[in-house]
Structures are given as structure tokens and as C-alpha cells.
Image (cartoon, rainbow, N blue to C red; front, top):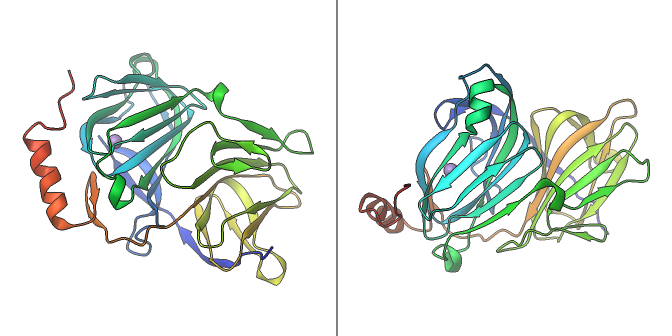
Length: 291
Ligand code: MN
């Protein structure tokens, strides 16, 4: 195995998303457009909402990619133009393949809105390859208890396997193209080596604490809110917590498509014509309405 070095460490920017809730976004930015096939990474909160304050994302369309929502705290409700409805609780994952198109709303659950509380989570956009952009929409609403969890040898560090495989544990969520999505919590002094196919892009986003990435002389440290982009120069990545500090992070990897991208707001296609078509279909109600 060859250990990957670090290509760069990205700072997050803070933006308002949806109806105006704050997110930290390592990409897309001017500095980093995408990490093919990942189009966007949003870290929502953690934010403490008062009663009646919580903001969500009211009705909006998507076409041509997948949105993956992972909630750590709070409670959200989802409705879409296909009649699909669901609720996300802490630890749950919603893997939504927008495909040919959906209109959906992603809002705080009514009871959460009334009472307020802590909201914390992630939304990641994963591109679909040209030949899958117009597949029928699909949901994989996966409750927390169905997400496989691997306890490490210290008995407290753990890895949640949202997509792909960790050691011998496979995720239950099916992906359209090879994707690795791990939520890793390491106590101080722990270390993980994860195999990554040599032509796949790989990155770590640090949720809390700080960790060390890479191996030997190439090791670099990164802390909360930073994104570590690994170089494509090996087939495994090495990460560890500090000697005295725990670290919590997301580890993501995927096979790049190297396809042309035409991107406009909620639509991600291959050409400008296809974006125009998406707008037209949306405006003509071909993506349905939320009843
Ligand atoms: Mn959305």
C-alpha cells in the first residue's frame, strides 16, 4: 500500500442557505469548485434555535444529482412532489437521488420549530454521471439504528459506515457510483488506515477537535471546520487523533467522472442546454408540485 499525501487544506466559508440558516461550506467556493464527484459539502450548525426561530429550506427543485442529508442533532421534515414524506432524527441519513427531478421542502419538524433546540448536520451533493442524470428519483431514508457502526479496539472510538465499507463492515445504503462516506470519532491517540481506490478522490472534513493526516514526514494537522484534500498518489489514507485530543470527522471518497459540468443553483447537468431544459421542465410543472 502507498499512503497518500495531502494536496491541500481548505478553510470553510460561512454562508446562509435555504431560508437563511447558517452553514459552513468548504466547497464549492472560488478556491475549490468541486471534489469530483462531490459537488457540495454543507455543515449545518451546530446552531441553537429559540422557540419559533428555526429556519429550513422551503420548496425548491433538484435535477441531475443526489443530496445526502445526515442529521446529528435536531429534527427535520421532508416533503416532495412525488408524495414522499419523511422525518429525520439524530443519526438518520436521507440519501435522495433527485435524478430526473423533484421539488422538495426540507424544514424543521413542527414540534422542533415550536420548542427550539440544537440543530446540527450535513448535506452533501453527489453528482450523477451523464447516463444516470435522468433516472427516476429515489429515496433511501435510513434510520440511525440501521447505519452500521464499528467500535474500534479502545472500545469508545467508532466509525459509522454511511456508504462504502470500513474494515469488513458494509453500508446498507446503495450508491449509484462507488462512494465512501464514513463518520469517524477517534479518542486521543487513535489511528486509522483506510484503503482508497487509487484513482478516487478522497477528503476528510473535521467536525470537531483536530487530527493528523498523511504519514511520516508528509503528516499535516487540521482542525475543526477545515477540509483535508488528499492527493491521488496512493491507495490508502492515514488519519489519527492528537496524542491528547480526540477528533471527529467525515471521510469521503468517490470515483471521479471527469465529465463536463453545467451547474446552475439546484440543477447540475452536463450542458447549458440541459440546464435550460431543467428550468423549462420545472416551470412547466413537469417536476410536479408539493400537495
Ligand atoms: Mn434540497
